[in-house]
Structure formats: C-alpha cells, structure tokens
Length: 240
Image (cartoon, rainbow, N blue to C red):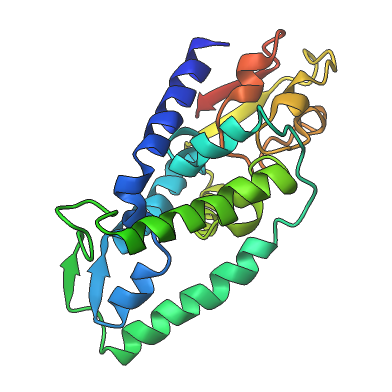
C-alpha cells in the first residue's frame, strides 16, 4: 500500500472512531429541528463548508475525511461487492429534505442566531442513552447493512444526504473550469490490467474512464486509490 493510501485510511479510521462524538454535526435531522427555531446549527455550518470545499476539491471529503468512509471501507474485508447503479436515490432523499429545511426556516421567520453546538453536551454528541441508540441505528441500518448487502460504499451512492452538496459544487467547478483537485489519465500508458476498476472503493469503471480520457465522474471521491495502484502511472491525482 502506498504511503498516501496509508495516510488516507488512517484519517478515515480515526474519524470513524470519533463518529460518536461528532455525530450531531453531520445530522440531517437536527438541521431541520434547528431551522424550525430559526437557529443555524453545527450541521448547517458543516454542510455549507462541504459545498464550498467541493468547488476546489470535489468529493475529497468523502474519500479522505468522512467517518462513514472508515466504516464502509473496513466492511470490504467482509464483503467486497461492487455497487450497481441507483445513484439517483440520494437525490430523491435530498430534494424533499432541502425543501423541508427551507419550509421550516421560512416558517420561523428566517435564521436569527448561530449555535454551532446546538443540542450537544459540552460539544459532544452522545450524551444519553437515546442519542447512543440513535447513533447505532444510523450506523447499522444506513451504513453497515447497505455495505454488506448491496455493495461497498452503498451509503455514499444511495443514501448520503451530504454527497449532493459536493456534487453540485463540483458541477459548478466543471462549468467554470478553475483549478481543482482532479484525476489526470494517460490512456496510452494504460496496459488494461483492470487494477484501477477492481480497487475503486466507489465501484467506478475507472479503466473505461481512462480509455475515454474522461476522468470526471459525479461519484468519484478523489481518494487516489486508482492512481496509487497503477503500476504504469497512467493515472495521476493532481491539483491543476
């Protein structure tokens, strides 16, 4: 394993271990609740930052930081199954959820204050049994079981409420074509060993993308696994 991948996996495993403490800062429920009270909570701030970061680094958060990533990539040891389609499902979830947030914010007369630590206890998410039960339900039902039954990183493909923020940010970047983190490929150097497609944690047809010289994909998390696994350096992860 290349050093870059050791660092990446170390980070996502660390954030996964911290997930119980930061759970509320990624909550799709608390942002609705706080909006109904005219409060900008922690998850509102984090989701906004994810969108802004995607203008420069795409979905790198999903590959390098997300606590759910550490859990899902660990599941590959038990179930290494590719995901087939269904990427539209998260949009079916995201659109009405965003509409609900806007509805509650408007009904509350707009946002009146910022409380980043909303509903946390000394900044920590899990402060009672109910919160702990909720955490395990989310972890098992939304992240662990889909990864085991449907395929690796199924949560990222099908259920993640954060991914659309970054996909939209990346689409804006692609329109204006400013410098950003991206994959660059040399199709002439590719020897079609299939390693990149086999190892991709998002089950993307990377070899096909290289052959077509089209490395942009809405589901790419810019983890660099394909680049670090390519013996011919046909794929590079670059900021340009």
